[in-house]
Length: 148
Image (cartoon, one colour):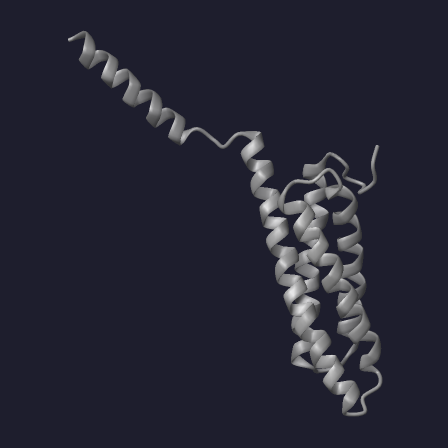
């Protein structure tokens, strides 16, 4: 009888643990990975958009030279942010602040170009990444994006 009561207590404890809310650590870890994914996604789109802009420049549309450069730089910053944030590195606040600013500038530049599907897609992805990085700053303990 005692064994049955113990077994029921153990099963109940495991069920309660499985239903318990995630710990703060788990929530932080999930936020870091979500931000890293947003940065990866943005880097890929910015790389594709820079290649698109390079073709347009080659076709004589010189106004795309600026977006070609902003997309290249944004992709590089996003790649760095993804690498640092994925491992919850100590400079996550610094790179998230920088990445959010790079994505804002790149998104602004791409939005200035008229009805180009690729440019719109890039701007939208930059906005998502900018938001993810700004949200991430809350989890780094440096909401302003600067070291204390």
